[in-house]
Length: 223
Image (cartoon, rainbow, N blue to C red; front, side, top):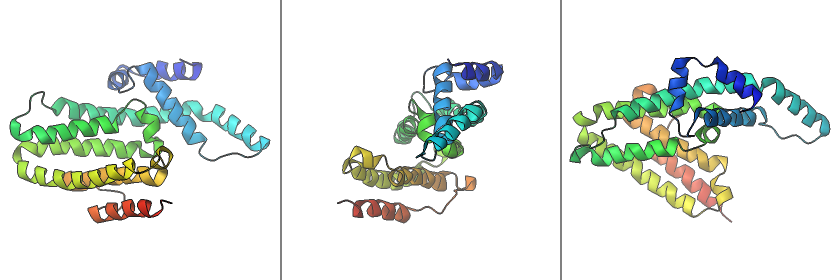
């Protein structure tokens, strides 16, 4: 662990350590590295073309890496706390009628929280991640009382997801990782929020039709 990360590590109180301890990166040290990488990405958002620009960027990163990493750690703590609430509610052996929904929720958790999730998500979207996970918890809480409604909503989401996965399979890896393609994945998560936890709100209008149009737009750009 580098000296700046050791300084952040020493500032963590026991409650925060507990919240951060169980994480997809495998250890607190690995998670802090992930947060530092995300902080570096945030601070280096714009490319540099001259030596003077490089020098200014280097100094900016050096001066702001620790506070930016600490800011991201705070955001990650909220996301992991929301994830832990979902995990605590997930039954190890769900009733047969809930199996598909529980499988869907577990798959969503794995998708949202892979190793390296902080850098992959990015500082700007960590609040969205917390909201997605909060929506999942609310879905779980209501699941026993709304099985048919949950199944209908899940079918709508899966139809969109299947079309998106078809798009990904048809794109080169570099194109599939582009910002506009990744944004479609976020739109699908926003659709989940709108269906299962509408009261949480979404930052933009979302519907299956909007997502299909976004997918079509990417297809139309293929050579």
